[in-house]
Length: 110
Image 1 (cartoon, rainbow, N blue to C red):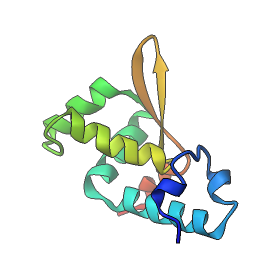
Image 2 (cartoon, rainbow, N blue to C red):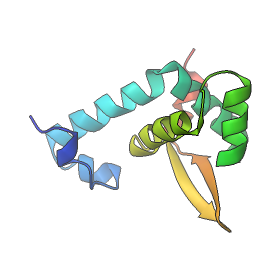
Image 3 (cartoon, one colour):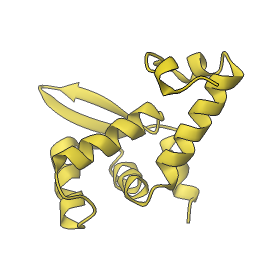
């Protein structure tokens, strides 16, 4: 069975969907993304804002004591971006995160 390194250059859901292994890997990644408590709260925050700067998101998570530093934010955001739950946008040298359709599942999770 392929591992994550076989899929590291994939940039769309369609690429994963070309093989059964890719579909299984993406599904597993997605479940790990949305079921993790910190990442779920990140999704809630981004979903409410629809678009939020990295700086604002970091402050919100630090204020809630969900993360300890920016590296924790980076790790979790990389995971959510890789699972197509959020997308990263850079405008005027500011990084923003925007919720995707897949990330909006958080509206239905308890």
